[in-house]
Image 1 (cartoon, rainbow, N blue to C red):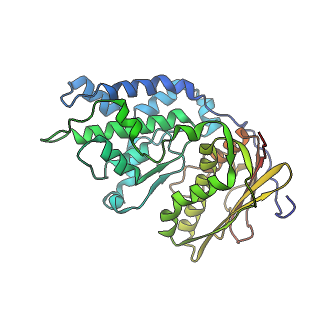
Image 2: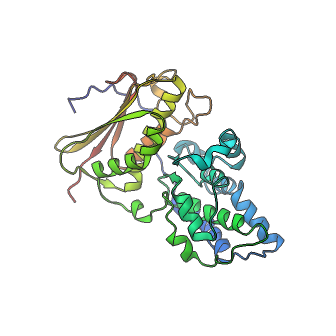
Image 3: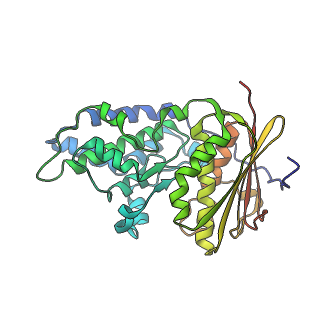
Length: 344
């Protein structure tokens, strides 16, 4: 811990809190039932159910199932179809040309569903979902939200495949969904296990590699020797790294940074491991120390201000702590994540 100088961030009044994924499971079950009972010649009521599931329904369910206080404390909200459509409008024609479409906190998948509306189709459901899986990457610490995203993408694929003169006929079981290689869906990654921090970081960076290369970002990777193991889930670590990378990329884009550098480093001590992510962007500006980790605080025109809040809450759930430096070793922001090591 003495190798990196850290400046403490004053505590906020927001207590870390995670939403209970079980409260969302009945709604998820309804979507799965809608999927399993799909018919190409659906009646008007079932067609309306499809449209609602792909539109603003998840946001309405979120507000019904969780209190406004809990949503604010966790910085949880769903983008909604209207906002996602507006966000994607300027790049809609280019979406099929992208190598990756990454949402580091996908929620119920509104942005990914919106992007998938512009992706090509195959002849049937499974090949279509596998094709989309080459484009779409999402992370979220709530497993029910991730599973909802998966089903909604499948519903969209079915809807698009069965619109026109030759509807696909091979859509009939949830088994098809379980075979789809959508990058954001991996139930095993959400089990609490001993996670090799270095390996998970490497895998996450590999996923982001085309995205980062396309933005001329040079990655400097300095990982501690051995296998630092932390108790948690791969999905939680992926979410932390993905959100921090996304923050750096957004800072680069906003500032027009040239010769972009992003350094990812792990340092071990007898009881802890430190994950440090630094960039040579503009640094943390326009935000008071007490607000750095607070939800809704952003200086970007289209930012949500949720990335660092998600990181803080995820790290707290893992028994760790967060810190930040406005101007780090590369000249831009440095974020420090300290996690306890585990041997069992």
